[in-house]
Length: 386
Image (cartoon, rainbow, N blue to C red; front, side, top):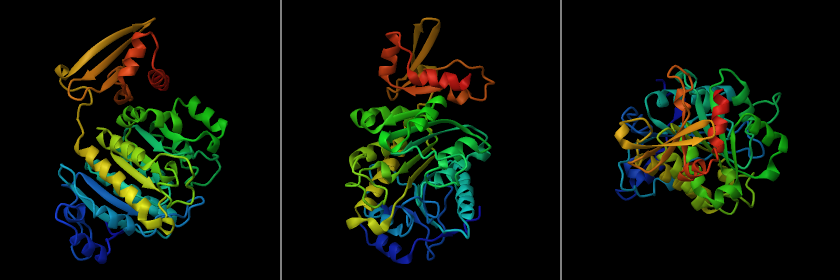
């Protein structure tokens, strides 16, 4: 793999890392610097990558600059009670064209994901999610994506690829590997009813901000079914994350977005995690940089506490519950290891969507089924498989 398009972390930041106490991330993360060279990546669980690109931003030009402000805060944090198998690979420099940046990011992510290394991408504008999605092309599998965002970012089909139109490009452009898309935290007044209707017609999942904040546990099964998680800082309220020109008064709190990040980390399926739209020029007292680093911390902790109980392993590790509903039979599986639940759609072993036949769910979904109510996510998944 050619890493020449990655700029090393600045030497002054390396000196800052070395000054931190021995149990902090600055001392425990392997850092790509001119002095030390490129870290050994293949023995790492997680790789951090900055992307200095904002030419397709909308209303937040300058995002992706001065990402070292995030690193300064990250290196100060103490590790949790888990091994730190993390490399900081530095920054992807802005290409001559934006397509060059996409190409570099896509190739790097594809390499990492193939080698079972989870990239944490720090942007840069959210159109970089498109390059993240395209990194899965060579894996020959369909993928699920969860966006934590106050907008859907569909745009019009004829629009150029930007931070506010990337989703339509993911849905429309070939090869089309997207099986399911979920939005967490949209705010209705920022999205047209036509957009909401379109996502509903595609049997995608959408959850309003208030719905999620009233029951944050809704996020866990959605993350458990995701391959890609993309977070737009606009989903966080301005008071907690001001370093974004598109920030608004309402959104997730700092504590809520850290909970969501941990849910993403503990998912056995999540293989890439991106945080976008950081604009250092607006960061009062490094508040947003601090929050981003805490999101990263919780994601890393989540990865280290993965239960690795995605069915099916040994049948003795699961309890099966059969629920007849009218002319349907719903099979539920509960992990003895973690207590988490799945519901099953019966598919032929040769069906290319077999990996989506097990749908993460909650105990409440099981209770609803026993009350003869088929869970919405089961119905939506079945319709996508028909």
